[in-house]
Length: 304
Ligand SMILES: Cc1cc2nc3c(=O)[nH]c(=O)nc-3n(C[C@H](O)[C@H](O)[C@H](O)COP(=O)(O)O)c2cc1C
Image (cartoon, rainbow, N blue to C red; front, side, top):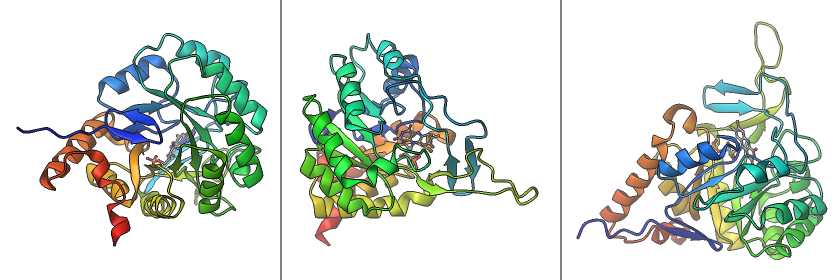
């Protein structure tokens, strides 16, 4: 019988119907949009980073298309935890992962307390945004603080807690190791990478914040390396992210050790069909290889 393929995956207790997830920050926080994305066949949806209080973010221009992807410095604009908890208050069946951003253990704990009674399936802690002061990478570069935040968050929820890491001053493997020791259930690797572009006519940097984060095709080989090393050396479930736009990209991340993948920039030109193309492609690949389950792909490259 054709299609006895099981696409579902488990990432540190986070169980989803297929390995595809919407990356944080790409389609905002509207529940109506989440519904449409889920109906398009995605495994799970990660919200834009949510902070305790609303954040305005930076002035435009905040996003720039470059030859190898996108540069962005949005500034973590979001309506804050009260407004977002109202937005998703009536969720019954959409697998939403809430991405949280903050500077202290107390902030993360307060946010988890705010969301924990709602129908959300996990938390992703943004410890890796590369262009906003006092949050993101500045937190992720401080192993003691990372430990405290994860311990605090974990002791206030039974839901999986995933740490989102990136390329900062600390070794990504050290932050992954600390995350595991503190009880994180998984790691998302990677966030955007600090980068910039300058208008050669005027000499003015394109982004209002000057420095932003690079996403898309250019960062894929770096992200593959991070997923490979984290899963091989730290032995913690990994969600791969960075430059995925085809099913071949997704399979490559899984071979490197990712149990699921997040897609961000590719939505810019492929819109929601990117998810159906990826799940169909993974299914056909598994069938061709005589495999029955997505999880069989995870970490195959570690053998060589
Ligand atoms: C416009 C934009 C906004 C983003 N906002 C967030 C965010 O709020 N929180 C976060 O953790 N990552 C954010 N990211 C990073 C993405 O979730 C993802 O890690 C990164 O873009 C790499 O994946 P991609 O190459 O598929 O886009 C953002 C990326 C972009 C392009």
